[in-house]
Image (cartoon, rainbow, N blue to C red):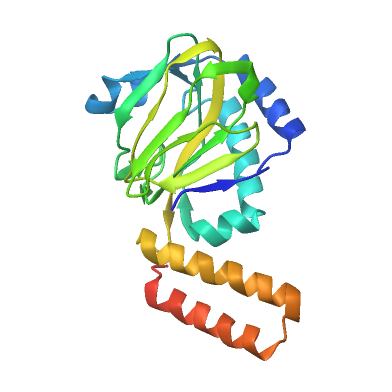
Length: 227
């Protein structure tokens, strides 16, 4: 399931965060890539131990914790600390797949990467190219979103970032382990949860059918989830 999370950050919040990180010390993005993806990766990243990156990442995690659409779709168990990248003229990232397991630096924690996320931090009119192209069973999807919008998609997907031909693309990216490993099961739970929310708004949260469907939802979560 590919899902756009609109306005995870407001335009002003996205602009402030972008301003905070732009003047930090950036490094070659290939330094944090595996052998296969490093061969096709041409961008810059903030180091994972950068204090500026950590503070910016904490702001993103706070926004995620308060976003009902994200929580409904992702059912997150663990979230890798957000990273930040930038693509200038001629830079891009060829077709690749993300690593299945990511170790959180400085901790014993390992995260199974069920979902990948990209939070766009630059106005799409400020650069040309730089589309995130995601390939999966639903076909190739080209994604280029307003600053503050995020796309969430299965980490198993092949994907690439098209070369930037003008301006500069700025984004945060990270992975998460869901309580529900299977993408199809998560999609069913998401559709059911969204339906329950719509019915609750129309009929009231105490409506007997809403209560019954809520029970079905939680019983399915019990069946599918690892917590």
